[in-house]
Length: 72
Image (tube, rainbow, N blue to C red; front, side):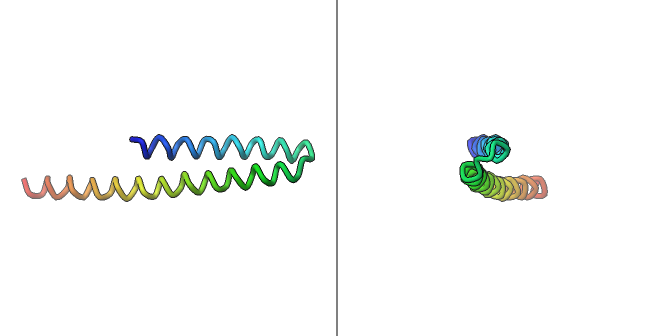
């Protein structure tokens, strides 16, 4: 559950920073907007990596459950 919570947290923060970067660029703060957008991309990558890890754990768990059902 902690993995899913962190994955969602990083995804939401990434999206919020993306919006902040768009506002900064709108206000012609190009450098600040670029830095914030770069940080949002890194956070999105962290969220996606956590998502991949969570999917792998879920698939392993599902395979164990299916083997248990087959053995019964």
